[in-house]
Length: 61
Image (tube, rainbow, N blue to C red; front, side, top):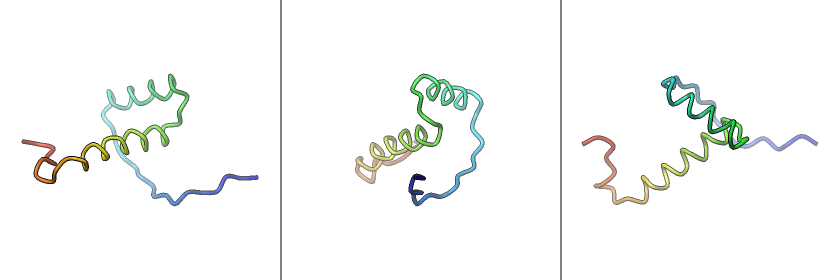
């Protein structure tokens, strides 16, 4: 029986080679597909970002 498709949106990005290499190494070591790893990494970052007060949500100072 096929898996139920999740509500998703396609994201096509160009990563710096160093970041791409780190993502590939992480996925090889963890056995996690790139999509799932990227979702988990972004979710963790956004959770930390949005937990800060709005006036502290700057990326660049």
